[in-house]
Image 1 (tube, rainbow, N blue to C red):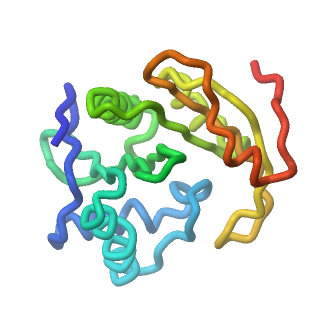
Image 2 (spheres, rainbow, N blue to C red):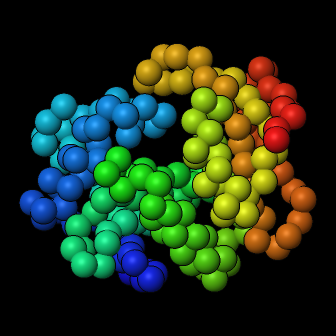
Length: 192
């Protein structure tokens, strides 16, 4: 568990309360617009998501999946996830009722500190360039823009231009190139 001023970051539990909270996060169409899945339609799909994506990560110890909870309730209102593969892909989601309060930035910064102390060398993160708010969070976390690439995004089957950000904990300029190498439609954009 990780604790910040306002938050507790912990594993999701298979309890009815956590599954109801997960359903609230995953069922909101706006919250899930820029995420790599469709919103869930019922509680059974939320439980299946937990079993297939979250619990599997816990069982294999392949990265991290933190439930973001306010201290006063200890119920998930969002999540921070980091893949254990070489991309070290960093992602997050938060219920709309808690947007624009600095919650996901606070949670993500705590996870980055945890990873730095765990001897991870770097993290990457990508966002749809239409989702500039996510890019602003990445910048606040100290991540820097490296390049953009176009992908036919599945399962939504839509073309998306992603911006890839990276934070190297050792301060080096090394860039994770796998997305650049995999997708021929890539470039370095001039960003503000």
